[in-house]
Structure formats: C-alpha cells, structure tokens
Image (cartoon, rainbow, N blue to C red; front, side, top):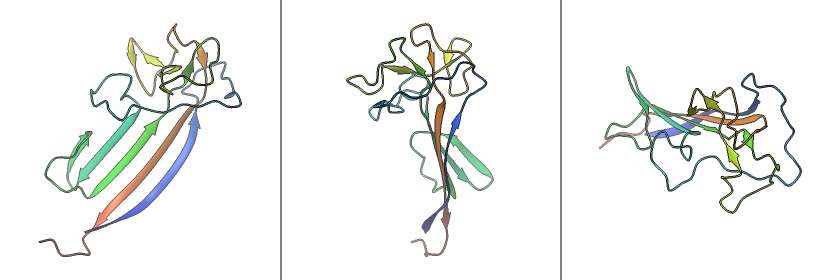
Length: 139
C-alpha cells in the first residue's frame, strides 16, 4: 500500500463576517494544541482528520480504527478572532486568538467573535487529501 498526495490547498475565508482586519506584522498563531484530544474544546476545534474506507466513511476521528483507510483528508482551520489589544502572540501561541462562535459553540464556520476576542481576522484554512493505492501486496 502506498500513498499519494492528491491535493494540497490553502486559502483565506471571511465566513461572512464584517470588518476584517489584516494580520499585523510579526503576528503568530497555531491551530489546535497537539496534546489535546477532547473533541469540542477550542483547543481541538480547528483540526479535522477524515478517513474514508470505500463505502464506509469513518468520519472525523483523531485516530483511525483498525481498518486501513482508502483516503485521508486533513483540514486545519486557524482561529480568526483576536484580543482587543491585537496581541501579536501569547506564551502558548494560542490563547491570544479564539475561534468564532456559532450560537454558543466554538466553530470553524462561526459567524461572530466572542466578547473576549472581538477583533476579526480572515480565517486561514489548509487542506490536504491523500489517497492510498493498492500497488503493494498486503500481508
């Protein structure tokens, strides 16, 4: 089994939010925290791993089950709401930013910034699709 990267793309999204601000010079941020796996927390909301095994889509998971997927899509959505002081960074490179809200929940498709992070920035998205190919005999 070998894998091939089929698509790789990055873009900016406004999510329909108004009053977008440009990123200030020297700005830094990360999406998600590598040590967190609790689905639904703000620390994991922007990281999507989707595995597909033919007709059975395994859906969003942090780790795949025992079945080898036929394809994997990785999507990373960066937070798009900043602190009022437009801080360039924070010690964890994360807490100076927040994801927009959809209702009362953090969401990559949120439509308003929380009161704690009122400055609206474009949302950066990176996506990659990798497909497995059965050109090696499985044992």
